[in-house]
Image (cartoon, rainbow, N blue to C red):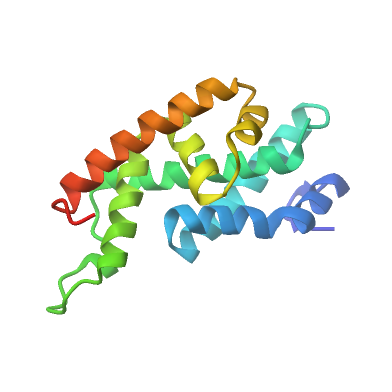
Length: 170
């Protein structure tokens, strides 16, 4: 059983952690591009699950919930970083030419953080996690048509935002 000072961790939570911690970490890492942030997301998601399981009955789809929770927690980190306006170590000038791929990754992270939560979640599920529109519709409890509309609008918005951030190099 997982140990937490003063808190009894239910067997269900331990089972969920063992079964899905890699999925949560991988999902968060794809969004944040940073292992430390992905670890923070992992901890946040399972703490939320602990509080959720204490106050409610079994989830409909544990994996779907955890994936969506990881996406949302990772996006929260990106948003807080934008509002914090701190400079990360890898953003400091070093006199060397910046790698286009890392510039694109940072620009995408900033652009995803600026999106409305549902748009960012749909985009992440579709293009970073590889789910189809029907799968996303089922996970989110919305129509396939709405998923398609959100994907279309989000791609258009990201294309515009990335073009502005990267000086139309994308």
